[in-house]
Length: 381
Length: 226
Ligand SMILES: Nc1ncnc2c1ncn2[C@@H]1O[C@H](COP(=O)(O)OP(=O)(O)OP(=O)(O)O)[C@@H](O)[C@H]1O
Ligand SMILES: [Mg+2]
Image (cartoon, rainbow over all chains, first blue to last red):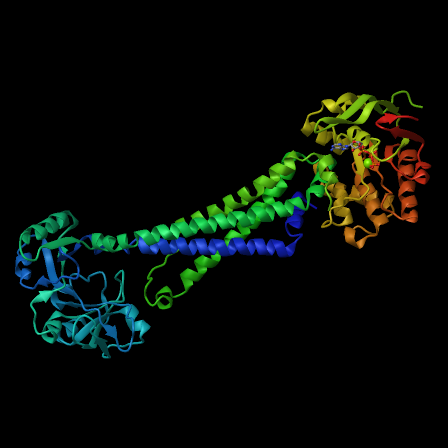
């Protein structure tokens, strides 16, 4: 027998309790990893190379207020802009869905091509879409999710536009941060709504990162003191604006995380003190046989640490495997996209499990260290 | 008798303070014990037998007075040195066996050897020899719950003698045993002193058990009366 074998036999003497402890640490660690991943998903917007080149200009009053279509020529005259397209959120419901998780945007296909450069066309042809006024460009994720192919029709019921869409899939793109959205001709929307002369937002692309800030400033200045003042910002800043809505949710998640960790500490501490208390007499015998205080300290610490770390490994590994190999978009109806369990998250959860192992054993270890042999021998089994 | 006593107890007192009253467990006790003696401590409950045994064995400390074992003043050792001293000098046998339930007989006996420099092979040999000495050479891999009370107590004796200590202390080792098992255990303790030259100190209430010893000490109210 080795000292390690002795520790192992002690840790596993009550198999059911050891398993329960490992499971509770595992479940809590998995929960912790999932919540941290969720928080990250909600607060860190997906990032792509072009995100700081792309600029969104919206009505200064609110995102819901449209902008006059005639602003286009003024924007086009601003130096440093490669391209500009109207970009209007349709917000329709797909087929018979009660809730549709991907967005439909009306754009001008020609300038739009140099905005969506991150996502090359992988099926159909962009030119065909440009030519077909009732065609659409669809993200690969949506194609896959609804089992669609090029040439199929997609029908949308308007919610705040009083019209429906019936679009033919002409091209499929893949490789943007969000491959779910579909795009169709703004001209079609104008036609169906009686040509109101408005757009939702302007979507533009700056020549370079260096000029992007100046372009933003100039767009804002151009329409200052007009009836439709504009607020332009980089796509990244725009996303961050959405993210700030999640600020409170993020605090809530952190609160829940704290509760999870706290509960976990209580469980682990009570398990270890029970495990040690019922062995007080044996530990006193070990002391009588000549084992040092630090030996017993080590036995208890190794046991507590071992149980927590095994539980942590199972839980963290399980959560990682689950979120990595499952289709999170499918499961959440597209609400969550990436849900990446990052090394940082794994590291933090592992640190929690390790610290837990130490924290749970330190109290019992100290009380065993203080116990005199005679006292310990008097305790009943 | 040999010239030098192996255990010298000098003016030993132990007081327990309970609230405002002092309880005197040992009252200026002095006694010498020679090598290979089998000393039996007797006396009424609460007379201080266990307390004396614990202090001699280095698991309790006196309020005043000294215990010297082979010239070493046990009371002067630090906590850590005392633990090492116990490992090398003392073997313990308790009334309730006190084996570790998850370990086999052989593993229980091996425990004190984990603190020595012995390698795995010599540990195994010593464990085997110790268990054979108590007549359990064929029960190496039984766990305590697979052994009778008498067998468990013999495993405990094997654990006490495996490190080859000079002193074996036993607190009511037959208290939980039937007559047959008790006499087996007492035979082994007697032969440890007579054949192996160990000094054995045993506490007992049983006059029959006392008959196995080479000398009896009677304690009453913390003092040796005979
Ligand atoms: N931890 C303690 N606190 C207070 N008093 C104690 C403590 N331990 C022992 N005593 C007292 O010291 C005295 C001697 O106790 P000890 O255990 O040595 O008696 P004993 O002779 O072994 O008795 P028994 O035959 O019942 O085992 C008793 O009066 C006991 O109450
Ligand atoms: Mg006693």
